[in-house]
Image 1 (cartoon, one colour):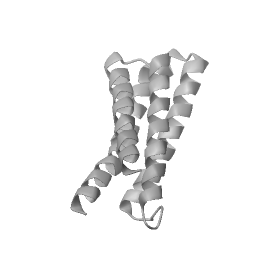
Image 2 (spheres, rainbow, N blue to C red):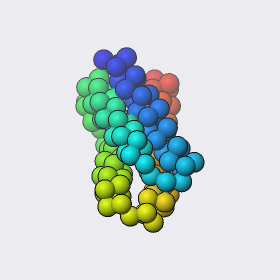
Image 3 (cartoon, one colour):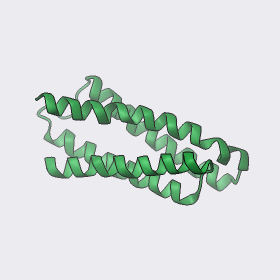
Image 4 (cartoon, rainbow, N blue to C red):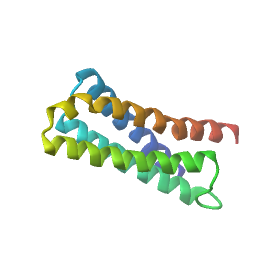
Length: 122
């Protein structure tokens, strides 16, 4: 299970990073960005579920656990908001959406990095 958790979490990192940075560079939200955000969310949720299954006590209310749940919640909001922006066809929101994406990505990095650091310290 640990191998699957590591693979899924790292795939989440790859997809989410590609989506956020390509949208930031292109300075416009496109449909494929929405798809990549969604794939990143799915992989992160799978990886987190596997990690919780491995943990002795399941989910814990420590720094990593709280920031991890916050990150998944923000990713979900981010995907929903991206869909809203795409389907509302609001050009102004499409051009400024990358600012929100970058903030969510930075917040997402906190549990990603803390999880890696925590596992190396064991």
